[in-house]
Length: 138
Image (cartoon, rainbow, N blue to C red):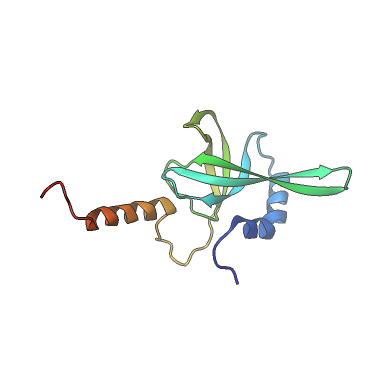
């Protein structure tokens, strides 16, 4: 029984599909495909991108995962979506160096209108501020 979404499940289920997609649809060298693993920051997503490398010594393909920060201008991505990202050419803040190009696959959800991780956090902070008594006014 799976308690929460984790990108490793996605990796195992879609590894073959993504590998053939990358082979058949030639991406530009700098573009990458990955899974959204974090959407808790406004206009930002954390993407786990996979590279497959054939290692001659073991005669086997190994998967290397690189987690990157990407800019999501309209906050359209949620956890589990498969996205295509490309480098910005400059940095947005200390970590963000990629930008979202396209959402290739949306993760099916029970509640489509559920807020993103960043929106949930903002709602919690707003509720906490409303429930706290205002000391300065008295």
